[in-house]
Length: 361
Image (cartoon, rainbow, N blue to C red):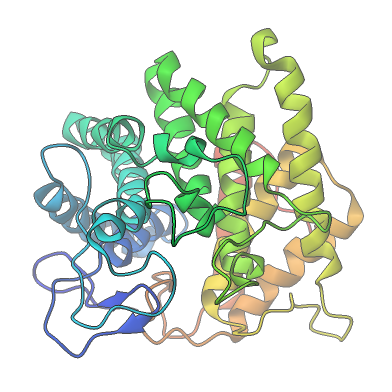
């Protein structure tokens, strides 16, 4: 089990794909992910429920303490920024990269509100969502119609900066659609739909998303990022279900989601373990993928191929040793056990989406 610090944070300082040797504050997504995971795990492990919820509470309080007055979560820059267009400058640090931290931090706060009913968590999630709309994080996406924007001649604000990572836009949609579910405020779903519309425009024929930064052309094909982008579409799809005003858009979403899921099915390995192909093959692939695949199954019922993939992904997680990486869920032992995964899957389906986990026990 990953241990939390006294501050309620988790000591992962990874910044934008590399690790700084300097002493900097904990990375917001590390705490946000664990808050979400502890809340979920508390529902399937009654023996440790109080411990899990206490750790979630500590993480939530830390997130509130770090949230700025405008709703964003500030990402601290390292001394040596990574290579690549748009990385490391003032605009990138204050807007482009902070959208990841702010959106995920907002999602964690909303999970805290749903669990504890604390109004401060809902207000924090709303403030994060508001920042993605009014603080430049979302609006700058729509100032360019093409992936051919030239970073050398256009300012980052004018270029299609967020399409450097489609998963950033997916995170925005995830947060906005979720906040809409809690508040019913139409501006959130309107902007979530706008974000999803942009995501679909950038989807490739194989169901993946175009990655703008030439230094890493397959970045968003990695399953962890593919699933984040897909999650934004799924959360928005759920939020507009049955709304006649969005009937045609819901049909478009169904097609995009189906293409994205089919890509994942196509990437399933043919050997006995039936795992997804992923160059890192790490825990984050399976944890982030399981929920997205589960939601797609319940919303669209993509058939037996998807059922088999979901169960294979869940079964594989028992073989993954969790050693404190930023994406590791808080299971009772260092290595996630098979029945924990089955119970977790059952909880996700029966409690959240009303269907039982597909596959054999």
